[in-house]
Amino acid sequence: MQYSDEVMDHFMNPRNVGEIEDADATGLVGNAKCGDIMKVFLKIENGIIVDVKFKTFGCGAAIATSSMATEMIKGKTLDKALELTNKAVAEALGGLPPIKMHCSLLAEQAVKSALKEYYEKHGLINDDNRHLFDMLNEDANDHA
Amino acid sequence: MHQNRRIYLDHAATTPVRPEVLSAMMPAFTTIFGNPSSLYQSGLQAHQLVENARAKIAGCIGADSTEIYFTSCGTESDNWAIKGAAQACQSKGRHMITSAIEHHAVLHAFDALTKQGFEITKLPVDADGLLDPEEVRSAIRDDTVLVSVMMANNEIGVIEPIEEIAAICRSNQVLLHTDAVQAGGALPIDAHRMGVDMMSFSGHKLYAPKGVGALYIRKGVRIANFFDGGAQERNRRGGTENVPAIVGFARAFELAVQEMEESSRQLTGLRDALINNILTRIPHTRLNGHPTRRLPNNVNVSIEFIEGESILLMLDQLGYECSSGSACTSGSLDPSHVLLALGLPHEIAHSSLRVTFGRSNTMDDVKRLVDDLEVVVRRLREMSPLYNKNILGV
Image (cartoon, rainbow over all chains, first blue to last red; front, side):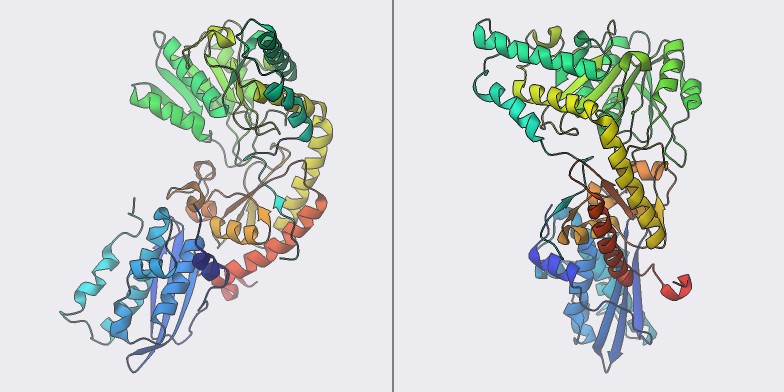
């Protein structure tokens, strides 16, 4: 199993590491049992993600996908951020080893879990976007 | 990142071939290349090389030459011993006993037997990784035919009380197999005095090449053949002998035994220095496995709040090659079965780092590693949602 150069770059030099103290929304996914925990913090102004930070406990792929996922939604509108998929994260990283695909799913879930908190808080969930949060019910570790 | 030299710290995984070993092997590749079963000169010479090697290895472990059988690796030795004993003894019984911390070569061999209707009891170990021989005694039933307990564990280096277990097995007329793949060349072994019936060894853990192993089968112990074929290995393991590797294996084993006292002292010094440095300099760390009843070269620590694979990757970038029991390095979702058997919570098991020293390592390697490890741990903890400096007050 070998990681791509992009994965190693995002692992060794992760973007957006940290916390946002007055975050408008946070998402926490994963658990210690499976060995991956991701927490995402969002700062949102006028429907735009003006800042995003993450903290991750996990393997190289978990850290790299957290870094890439946060990079991909930074500065985006909420609607645009909701379009994030784990496949897009993995592709942007030059691919992931098959047994690490769940890490990208977890990264998507971390972002969407934070967005869901914001959407719920502001009554933004409607019949058009509700399905976009369905993937939060998937088991990221059920990837075998 | 201050050096170009790479520091290999994973000698429990494999070792380089020693130059003395390689040069001992060379004639078997080129000049004495005959098939040991052939009756002309080069065949007879090759046969002699194999028999000399057998005698040397027997001498290294207190056995007779006729009790040493060459195999292709430690895994083959384990499979042969366990499945061969199961098959040969099934009229007497179909129950076998092992420990929860065995190598997969043993555990998965037993899993295969379970599917064939054999019954396996997997005994727990204590928090230090030690198996209580009394657990073995109470697990033995009328239909128990085999006990398999490793001599020293590959992940946490713990040395199991094999002699006590052997005495219990003998008095109950149950066969005892021990996986001595990590112990070979590292610990004194006297097969006859220990009273074991079968013992597995591997070449590449003791500076011989990959692709050669051995199984000690005590005289009089009958097990079914695993490899059917020619008359090699006293009709018990068919297949043309890997002569160069067998020669290298014997030379390497001989050197390891000759140098054991000195290298053991040296490795123990490195081991204890690394353990002490990590535990005192890096907060929230713990040693996995018994502090003293462990292989001279084995360090296994958990570094809380960070995950093993990411530790390995960063250390690799800095030039260090080590191992971990985290799920991500095992190719499964669960962390090491050995660490879980110690009673560690999953997150602590995911946080493990294993360093196994060898001949090339020095105290300078330990100093550099600890310095760099401190940096790696700080960086990964800064990224970890489990680590909160304010709460922890550090």
